[in-house]
Every structure is written in structure tokens, then in C-alpha cells.
Amino acid sequence: MRGYLPIENLPDSLALLPAPPQPGTPTFDTDELAFTSTRVLLDQPRGDLARSDARLKFPQATEAFHCAAGIPLNSDATPHLETLLRRVMTDSALSTFKAKDHYNRTRPFVYNKQASCTPEEEASLAKNGSYPSGHAALGWAWGLVLAELMPNRADALFQRAYDYGQSRVVCGVHWQSDVDAGRLMGAASVATLHTDPTFLAQMALAKQEIAALESQGTATPANCSTARSGQ
Image (cartoon, rainbow, N blue to C red; front, side, top):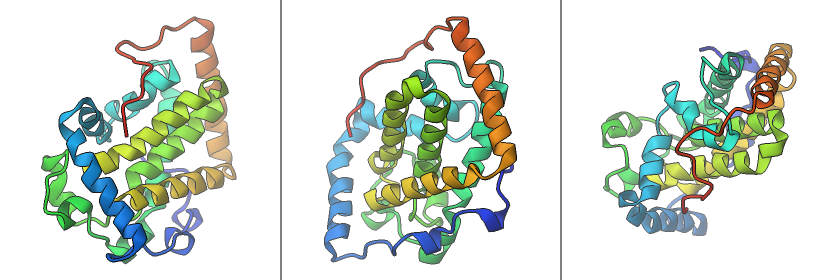
């Protein structure tokens, strides 16, 4: 689904972000430590969460946030909200492309010659630049949008958005600095989206949907835990 913003209005990741850390620098050493220290998590529940967070097809993609939101996020229960999240996903992901293509940074699982949490995606990911993280950008953008719509659940939504980005480090497909830069692009995308009247109109419709569900006392989706999962 297309985004709200024309390509020329997207935040420019190449202009906004510094170059990614180079091997031999302290920041790269921090990236490498984040990679090596999270390998043990792959066979633990945190690794399972990282695999789940890697899914970008709908409705699975937004299911990552439905516990934090406290309402179902799908086309049946919240069609306007799902459309909003689909289009925000497009804009935030596209905002990362200039830097991705320019730097074409090698991903950590390739650099370290180790498996990621999604081996079925490794061939395509190895051809795609690591910096900045598109997953982290869209996850942080979703967190910002959902928190604006549901300020009473903002802390839980920001936690989920943060952990969603960290899942890419746990998975081994992004360096920590990729994820940090992705969050910046997600925030820049949401700020820019607030200048778009169609986005603002969709936000208003989504807010009405949420209010209707909350007034019905919709139960928290099943299988939700209040505990955060590690890194």
C-alpha cells in the first residue's frame, strides 16, 4: 500500500544521518558487542519474539503491537487504523532507502559469518544495506502514532516499539547503530506526516474507532503478558 507522502517530501536519511560506524572505531566495537552478547538469546523466548517481530505481512505485522494497544489491530476490528499503519509503514520504510542504498552496510550475520534468526530471509537481506534499519523505523513510527491515538497506553506502546527495534539486533540482521538510526528516521517520518492532511484525517477516523472499541470494554487480546522480554 502506498504511503501518504510524495517521495520528494520524505525525510532524507542521507542528509539526516551520519555515516555508519567503521570497523576499528569505538562505536563499531559497541555494535559488535551487541551482536555477540545477544547470540545466546536466539534459543530463548527473546529469540522467538525476534522471529515473530520480523514478520511484515498483515495481519501478523500489527499483531506485534496489539497487546500493548490493548485492542485488536486488524482490518475487521479497526479498518481505519490498519490502513493508517500500513501507509505509515510505507513512508517510514521508504525514508531509510537513500542511506541504505548509499552506504550498503554489511549486515552483522554476514560480517560475522553466523546465522540469523530468519535463515529463510538471509539471501535477500545480504543484498540489502543494513543502515539504517527499516524495521526499527516503522516500529518506532507505529509506536509514536499509536501512543498519540492512545495516550493512556503510551508507555506500553513505546516499550513495545523499542523492543521491536531491538529484535533486529537479537535476530542478528542489524547492528545496534542501524536500529538507533532507524528510530530517528521513524520519528522524522511521523513529524513530517503531521503536515499531510490525508494522514491527519485518517488519524481522526482511527481515533473514533479506538474510542468505540474502548467504550465497549473490549478485552485485552489473548495471550498477552505484561512482562518485557529481555534485551
